Structure formats: structure tokens, C-alpha cells
Length: 105
Image (cartoon, rainbow, N blue to C red):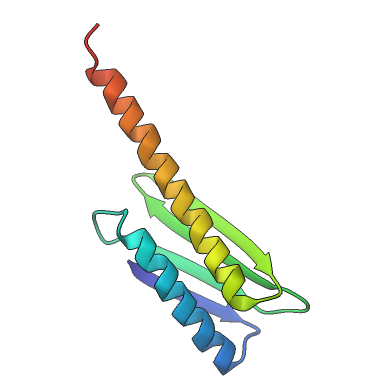
């Protein structure tokens, strides 16, 4: 994964914590994708919640996951899980489609 991050309204320690959580979360995505894919992350700090938006362009589709929480690492982890679930669902749809195309009539 090629991770591009944008931080808004975070201090240094929050940015470091978010980077660590993003790297850990996107490593789980990396196992599902067979080629390098850019992932864009926007992490916004604010009162009272942190907002995390992840986007990934994969096989002609733009997948976007968003999360909000009072805890930064929970918001990042939730967004990563949501994006991972979208990738899994997309792969299942493609496999089902291929199986239908290859099924004997």
C-alpha cells in the first residue's frame, strides 16, 4: 500500500499515533490486494470527535470508508475495518460474477 495522509487539527503526538494506527490497519488491506494501490487518509481532529476518511481506488471502483469517535485509534481502526470489508465484498462479487460467466449452460 502507498499511504498518503493528511492531518488537520492534530498535534504531533496525535499525528504519530494516527500514522501508527493507519500503518497497522492498512497492512491488513495489503494482504487482500495483489498489487500496490494508493490509499488516501484524511484524519481531522476536532471537538469533540476525530473524523477519519480512507479512500482506495481498486479495479475501477473508488472505495471510501469514514469513521468518527472520541478516541483517535478507535476511529482509525474502525475506518480501516470498514474499508477492508468493502474490499472483501468487492472480491466476492467479482468471484461470483466470474463463476456465473464460466458456468456451463
